[in-house]
Image: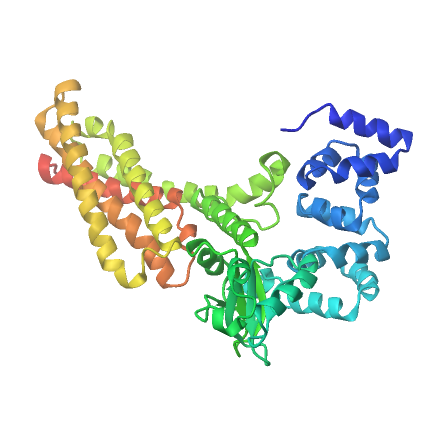
Length: 457
């Protein structure tokens, strides 16, 4: 936990010009804590503290700031200083940073990098956003199959300081085709005279460079991998996606799905911002679209109710109207539960489109059971507690039963249909399903009332 007394000490060191003491102190701290210290300082002093760090420490601290703050800190540097920072950053993070920086500024920075580094940045920034290529790093270890374990360990010892991860060593042939991998543990435990191709694992779980980033991240999570190799169309190794990057991808995707499910339009620029950093105007802009659509859709319930009241002037209509909120609320909640469950199942790969009929049948059976329980509860509650006639109680109970079944069917069918036509199922949010069930549930309710109560025009 952060000690608040450390920040005033930092300010005293800054004001006294004790840069060496300050640098030594910060080098002993976790980069995340250093980022917190800097955030608590005024902009001028915070920038000064950031600038006194060595490039490698500066790169580690930079990763703990949000994107806007990273851009501001880097663009405040002279181009040569920024190039030095890019040189020591992990390959995927520096490519992402370059993509966000001002193009004119990038044109001034890149000439200060070696040609190999410039080509690496250009290659990584050229991949389509949202693909494995856009999030992979080219910072990995490769081994030829014919060398011994002793030679591999010696090579690893030299390359390790400049690699993001060394826990997996990827075995490639002379054309850089991926043919296997060796874990660091297996290398350490193997005989020094053993040849790499004798101890490597040939069955390599991998992904293509143009695969969507979310399935790639889920593969890493499913098989508990530290990294996943990425290959091109010719099976040549072009990069890896690391475990920490995969967790970041899943966190962003889950945030996006959660916002969509709640009826909030996703915004890549602000989805990752903390709650208090999101501007009220931005929040309003993202929410108003869905609220306006739902407002218009919700108005469908009013004409339905008015139609039955004007057409059938029965004395029981006012009594029936008392239970409209109960029915619509229950139906909306049942539909929301179902759509949430189905979307989660599809996101995790547990539900396939080929299983659509089985999913709908399962949710129909679930709705039938829930409807029986809630319908019986409504029957007893309305007759014995509210002291209304049996015929009115039966109408509400039967409507509750039918609405629960209908809500579960709709809640399962709509996201499956959305996936079938290529629409993100998360867009079919809980509020949308709830509104749809409200309108159709009213029709079911009053249709049952006309049938059982014998209402006439």
